[in-house]
Image 1: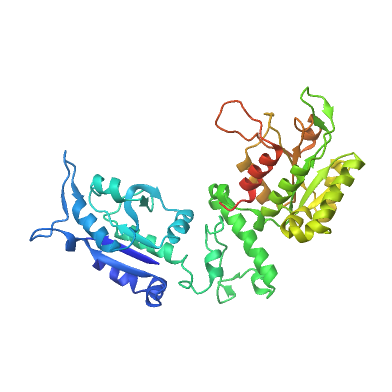
Image 2: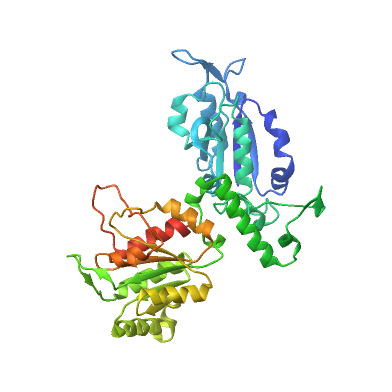
Length: 418
């Protein structure tokens, strides 16, 4: 990867680019960083790069020297992705870092004074970036932060890829606590799990501590985290065909459809759900489900499309939902948290972010109940531990997602990785 920085104070970056992990990455040619002196592209004996703002208010970096520096960096190749450092920019996040690390060439403009001439920004800057809601004397420190954060995403810059993956925010959670020698310091011992020598015990302890630290310090980051790897128990999706409602509000039994089986099982597999439970009291319908599953897991379909068979293996059929819940409890050795879903508003229903926090905190298996027809009967919803608020869009009262779409939306909110 190539990074070009243009600044009126190039000496600011020299020591940084030759030190520590970034310095090793540059030396190993994992990334190339060029620092351009903005004054080299200025006209006149004084090499002026800034001037007073029209209308008053302070000094502004001039557009022409910046444009010439950009032309120099691009050479005969494609124009690089241009970043302007500014307190008015988008606040830097790990997601942004990963997107920037996918670029072949970054061109970072270090802002100063009142900023850049707006004409240069409008014409050339692809993204303005801020490292926080405060003001610095110049853009060199933000440029170094950008380089450091992006460099960690370049293979070979950091020694172990696992070290990057365990960093705070990479998986949506804060990092776990860390300890070193001695094992007892001023009367305080290192946690026993870390001294056990059992890698799985260590891994489990670290993940749980990452969860607890995130909940205590930064619960806001849960919205973009995949909580699946941090749960000690499994997640389940149950599609109920009885008791559900017809369009008149009467209790009925609906038919199983192949489209639901195929699409929901693939969604469950994508998001790591342990089982897709299909609940119908009709033996003929249950037999049909078993026949479809067998075709894709044992018959011709297993050879024709193994990926489809992998997904359909997660299907398990039950005659009634309470028996399904007992099966989950026995399998997980823990009473599941039962979550009811509905397109209808219901008193006491919770927001999905609050439920996400509770799932992580409770450390219990979770079962998401979805209804067919016109939704779950009140008797089912009343027996749930939690009722989720309906999925809402932006077009007023219209709220008629297919159950397949609803499953995808909700699983992405809980188990999608940003």
